Amino acid sequence: MPVPADPTALHPMPEQPRVVLLRPLVTSPLIEVGEYSYYDDPDDPTAFETRNVLYHYGPEKLIIGKFCALGTGVRFIMNGANHRMDGPSTFPFPAMGGSWSDHFDLLTGLPGRGDTVVGNDVWFGHGTTVLPGVRIGHGAIIGTGSVVTSDVPDYGIVGGNPARLIRTRYSAEDVARLLAVAWWDWPAEHITDQVRTIMSGSIDELEAAAPAAPRG
Image (cartoon, rainbow, N blue to C red; front, side):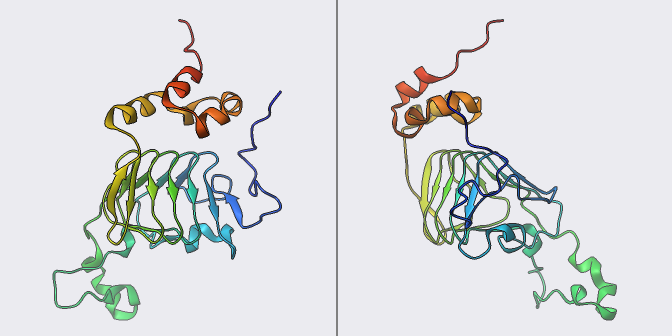
């Protein structure tokens, strides 16, 4: 009987220690990652929380779905990176300590964009940067070196700085069909049986391969 890959293995490819599954790695309650999403880095992929999720000082969450592929150097900029822009200087004096900290109220209430949310089955190219509060849809592809400043639609392909929509991978009708089938929510055993269809099949074949709904 086919056996699914282990979603709890930190290094799913033991011969490639540069690859880590993020769900068993992250410890911050402000970071949520779905099963099988991975990060690839030849230096130290286990430092993802500190090296790739930056300025995470506030309550906002980073939420990454299942089956996402994150290339080397993907970085998420969180709301803590914000500075005041309504006065002559943007320098955060109160954060530096001393008597300057008496003015910490000047750093509170800065505008935030909320949680950063990544859907399922998203592929991030090398060196991409995602700004605070962005929503990236299911099945999207983020081109190498992109700076994502605004939301990305389901199955959209974006690239550039700032990232622009290049095209969508499917028509609006087919995107709706893919979202309805939601293969990433299938039981792992069923996904294992249907890997070839998920990777190279048509939408018709994917729909036909979906597990039967339980009879009520």
